[in-house]
Amino acid sequence: MSGPQQSSYWYKSALYTLFEQFSVVLFGFGSVFLLLRVLSKEEFGIWALFLTVAAFIEVGRNGLIQNALIKHLTALNPQDPGYRQQYAVIGTASLVVNILLTVASIALLYLFAGFMATLWQAPQLQNMFYIYALSTTALIPFSQCTFLQQANFSFRGVFWANFARQGTFFLLVLFAWFNGNASLTGIAVYHALAAIAGAVVALAFARKYLHLSTGINRQWMLQLLHYGKYVFGTNLGAMLHKSIDKFMLGSMLGTGAVALYDLAIRINNLMEIPVAATASVVFPQSARNSNTGSLEAVKILYEKSVAAVLAVLLPAIAVVLLYPKTIIVLIAGAKYADTAPLLQITVLYGLFMPFARQFGTIFDSIGKPRLNFLFVVLGALLNLVFNYFFIRRFGTIGAAYGTLLVFAITFVLNQIILYRQLNVRLVCIAFYVLQFYRQLLGKIDQRIAAFTAAKTLVISQTAKPESNEKTI
Image 1 (cartoon, rainbow, N blue to C red):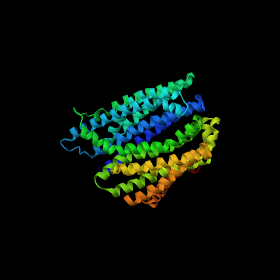
Image 2: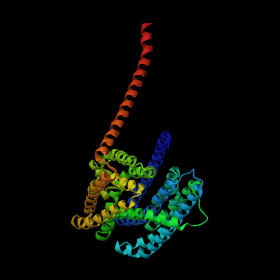
Image 3: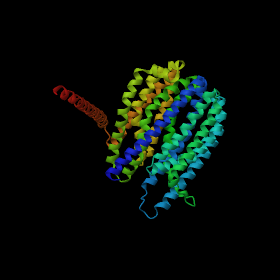
């Protein structure tokens, strides 16, 4: 990319991915706002566990397919004579892997649905998991089309597909709320209908990128699986790291405790909008830099992306720390006011999330997913051990203590690896954060100066005729 093209890529990509993440969180937040008022604490806890298991399946799919597909498609040269054929071969192999993974996940879901319902003492979960088979089937075209668009540096369709999926679910929940007949099974059906809506929109936008070969190349399937296996394991480990607290709360303290903890996490997830948006944009660009051997560019990319996200998050974290109870009551009502201490701890996760997320993104993009996988497995194991003892000792808030401690430990280890591999320095990240604030303040000063000058000019122009009139 030339200078202007690269600048345009970053601007448009960041804008669409930011809008995508914002719409996902906004509609998700709106749905939760309504569900908190129509479901009991126990029912909301069951819904949280359902979504967590569903997220495991979706994140596993993304890990095995997304990065491998993007990595290999961006490595192709569009000027090569065999580009279109090679593109189609890789795309077809990826689609077959997607279908096989979905079939396997549905089989496992049917096999363990009853066990999970018994473990968490929530019999409704079994039928909800059966219904989810429809959702995950619809997500085959949804995911494949969004991955292809990302590989082609096109994020417009990704935004609209996610907008359609999340927006449809929100409208259906809103309809149920107005009618006063919301049930967990019905909400699971809405979840499936929303996935179908998102798939239709994704297909509409990705048609020009859908090129399939007449045959299935097993070698490419194995190559994609080989690359994606570590990212697959990494993503599942990361999900386990993020979800083990809820799973353990559900089995040790019941779904009511899950509801309290999940609410705090959902508010905290608002912090992930800039984190996830930045990761979506950074991966394709970092993959291209690593393909050209420019590791120094990858280092700077990591430092600047982390700094930009931190600069946005720090003020938000400060506000949540100061007014946790007010935020909880406004969002969920007075019956969830006892979630405030939990929120004050979970919001601190935001200090570590940019470092951890970009660590994984960078090492996946430069062809070292195994390192990221090992780190995530370590974090998941630590979280399992710490949560067990902290929950037994402190109850629900113990899950927050244990997870925060794991974030701190893995942060230190991540920075050691980044320094040795890419010479990443925390002092550089701190410098970029301060630079961001200086630039922001500079722009604010310029706007104030321009406004003051314009106001002075208007006053002088209106005063001049009056002085002339008095002279006459």
